[in-house]
Image 1 (cartoon, rainbow, N blue to C red):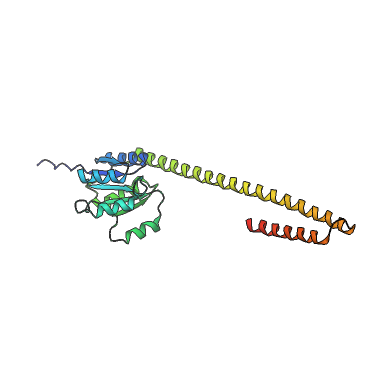
Image 2 (cartoon, one colour):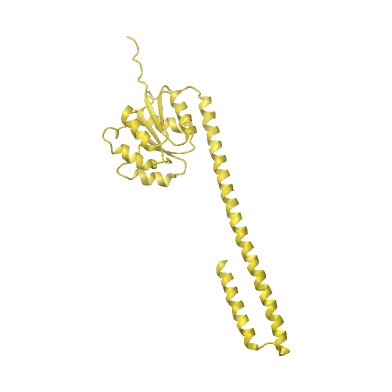
Length: 228
């Protein structure tokens, strides 16, 4: 009796990051799956309704509506709600996932980017079974590709943090420059009062004028303290 041919599973990947779509698509394809890609939530729902995939991988970060909203729309649709759905996120954390898992309408699995191919495959196996989603023996290419992508993401995150620090430094320098300018002006005012006090002894200026100047100086000092 001939061996029954295994059904080719259809995977829908909804992610704005083209590199991640290709990366996950490669992992799926090497295990015999067929892949459809969507760059946004609305497009993803349209493709899911049209093709009814066997598995949906949905990113939280999307250009139109975020993945949590799209997940709710898919899981609220009677024609799509039984399809296993995995939420993945670059910016989300475990606390975000835990809060979402407590909702009545939620995803079936969650993964934080970057993740290894083993983590991804294990989650898929848990939802649809090992025999349905075959293993590729010693998939060194997939491992290397995932590691390289994770490295690039970490590098991009570091570059963003450095850019933010540069901007913070620039703002601080501007503020210090303004403060330094104010300090110089106040220092000049203090010297001016000292000169006027000397003239007061000689009867050149009135004591009332010096009191007014001192009051203005004290107010200026208070303003400077508040701005700091």
